[in-house]
Image (cartoon, rainbow, N blue to C red):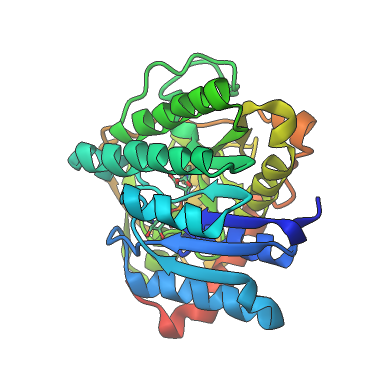
Length: 332
Ligand SMILES: NC(=O)c1ccc[n+]([C@@H]2O[C@H](COP(=O)([O-])OP(=O)(O)OC[C@H]3O[C@@H](n4cnc5c(N)ncnc54)[C@H](O)[C@@H]3O)[C@@H](O)[C@H]2O)c1
């Protein structure tokens, strides 16, 4: 696809996946407007560092990404942004993320994830946006028994407010295709990791704690598993979905690693990579956490040419190298 005629709104552009996606789209030649409200879920300084890394990585092309600080739940502000900028496409990655905190603040999660996404879809539709890609999550599969999880499986039993909001945005997306023929892709990301990973996520936390010789909490007996997906593979999937969604109309794709890793194996990998033994505090499983995730990626392989290129251990190594590079300025 020729990106040079694309003007793309990336929401959540200062966050983990958003910063990598904005960088990749700009590298491909697109003009990117990066929207973020520097939500308090984690430190603003980390998000500013993400954006600084993007600018540095883009070098002479840094002006291709323009940042706007605003809240996507502000409908009049979004409407005027869309009218002013006339985006050709939207990659919507902003959200209140995280399963456990959604149990504490369900109404906040519903407002940002459900209302916010609907506000964006409506602004996109009313200004003739040609393609809309949004983040969903593997959490929509809940505790489904059948693995691997396929896009055609039933997803009517979410076990956290976060998961329910992600399923809801998939459903509202369908109405925008049905009513207005605006192509919308929903991408079910399976636990994403790599440089700039959110500080609340286990790999990021464990790398910091184990390397500092501090104790780590392990929820459950260590047999729960996650289908970790390296950030570069996710970004390749996001761009492929952006390029191909017009042929599909409304489509859901899994983007996963297809090789689940148990919590025990995850900890052992980090121990090997950072060269220190973990001191583990075993605690009960947490409410809202699913037992396992495991992606069937045959649909995305076939329709997006999606493939996994980075193994779990290689990815953890790259994340650790990044942590060491930025640790002088590490915050949070
Ligand atoms: N990281 C994962 O493993 C994972 C897995 C499944 C799905 N997802 C989804 O992928 C997307 C990106 O996740 P991430 O890990 O990069 O999270 P992140 O928290 O690093 O990024 C989200 C960004 O959205 C911004 N934001 C939040 N509320 C906003 C609002 N009201 N207005 C404008 N900006 C707002 C935040 O400030 C943040 O920078 C989210 O939709 C998340 O639900 C992530």
